[in-house]
Image (cartoon, rainbow, N blue to C red; front, side, top):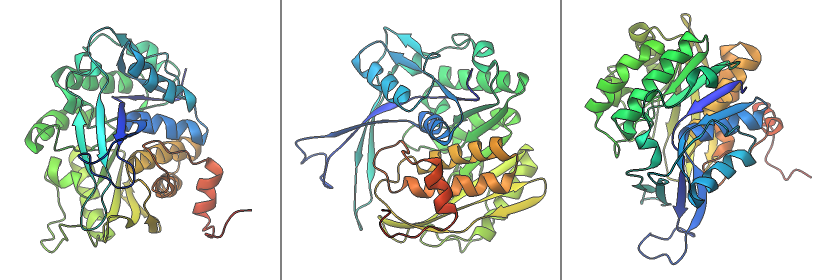
Length: 342
């Protein structure tokens, strides 16, 4: 079986070309993506075997999503197929300063919202696996999905897997109070928390108590989030806390880095100035790069650097999925130049 297993929804993404608004476009570009699928793809492209667990409708859109996963080497044999429900859709409208990019979801009553505890044979899923990953998007889809998420985390821990959880708060799916009440009990079965500078404050109400923090995130201090990482570890007893840090001076040029905290020690990496082609999936690429790096090296610092570099590259690639290779990641880590590679 696969070394890394992920669980969650993937959707069909529809985007107006050339920065058009949804109201004005006459065509839509089609992509496939979803947090946990993006992670499975990243891990697969970097060299580990991965499997993605989900529930899809037994129709052309379900097969489209499945085929995209298979194209990237992800094991899709564990997907639950359903004659009920639908494939989720989301519309991505790309902005440019001062208009931010925006997402419109059309995912209500998707097949995965009808998944129930006991429907997935997790014992079979976790046989031979090393790592299980899920994100906060998944339990936000409904009470039954949240119950399955909690079930999977508990059984993964019981099976001896390392578990990771990307907090990934989505305000269009649930409120901060709902997110906190649902997710805090799950944290007892999480080894590695992956989060952002925003989500920890919103969901767990944990901050560095710095009233001068830039709420628009045009400037972000890594030192202040070391305090956040330490507070998270103290409260939930995580093995590792990793926080991605994004400075947003403009829509299409950001500064990107990450920190990690484990066993009383902080780890940091260089900041990448990224010219953004598509930022969707960058956090998932961090998760995938970190998971790969930790399994390959058993070293938090190495994992952090790999996650940081792989996610930096993702900003340059259209779509949710990261098509970058391990060689490209390693080249960026070494500080490769920007001249044309010939």
